[in-house]
Image 1: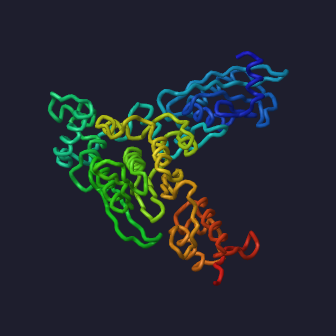
Image 2 (image 1 turned 60 degrees about the horizontal axis):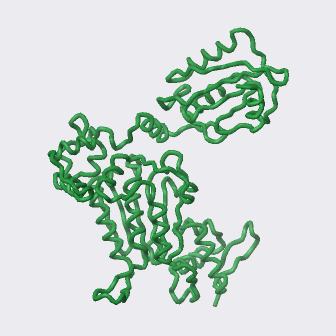
Image 3 (image 1 turned 120 degrees about the horizontal axis):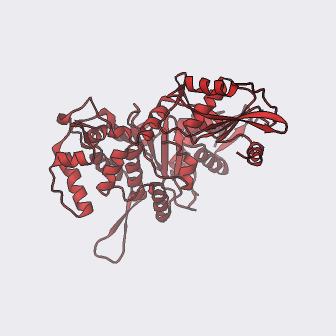
Length: 451
């Protein structure tokens, strides 16, 4: 690199692809591993965290010794390029690290990845996902040694084939097993995990999906456990949710009246499909849907895949990637998914067209949660708590009566909803003079007023 380019990099400071070290120690090798597991980078030795050029003593054979230490302490072994550069009359060593094609790389059996300006110790889940991405595969394309052909249903396979034929307006000439091989649902004459999940004939713990209708945060009116194949799950989940939605008839001038649900049905369907496609089936948790009077909560176990964040989801600034490529492909081929990466935008658009407030997308416990509301945009709630218009406000009011002298985070946890909702409901209760805050901001809390 030219001197002016190096000085420009140093001036910018440490970031996703630049690291400063004052000397060669084990932290340098950790940074090499982290860069190799990400997009590559440059490590400057002889510069401190404040981007000050301190210099480093570089003796004969020292650079080759560093190259050997990096090679011996990385698994698989990494060969880096190191050069000495004179900057402002001081010697600095520059290590160039390229992104490694076969990931992940380890240092003493520990795996690191570069995130922003620091080295992140990877979890077991991140290690597994990185390995699968490297070999251009995903978990559901791997062979499932715990199940065999006796565990899948010919009827479910025929359903898949028929839906693909209808979606593509063509007929297969091959037999069902050959078709599954072509889709790589069968490998080496064995089922893949994806094939088992898609076509299972049994009640499977892997596909456990729980839906409940709640009167309040702790009282269940109705519930269902769905442990079927993934295609049937969609139908059963939508059917149960629809059973508990309010409806109204719209007069359109046509002989048949149009039914309108209080929630956008297409948004619900899109969320359910996304839950099934993107769920981490290696996680022991269940997918859960909770239906309340004023909201529906959808929870999926497992963190967001790869580098996707909640912020990227909200902004739409992300490329479509999924941890379950076999399942996603099956849903795409059957027409259940119209196009990859459009789910979040469609959910928001459906809510907007239905006239309800925007849903919440958030990381919750060890997974991801989406909350749909039936509150209309700009509708507002004018009636008091006792008139029973807003079930969330009523539940909060009862909690404040039962557990006085608590603040927003406490009630958010108790009601299993966002702090934003609690703040909105508290504002309404205070406007209606149902509650008041007593004590100092640090030690005080909310109390119900006496009538």
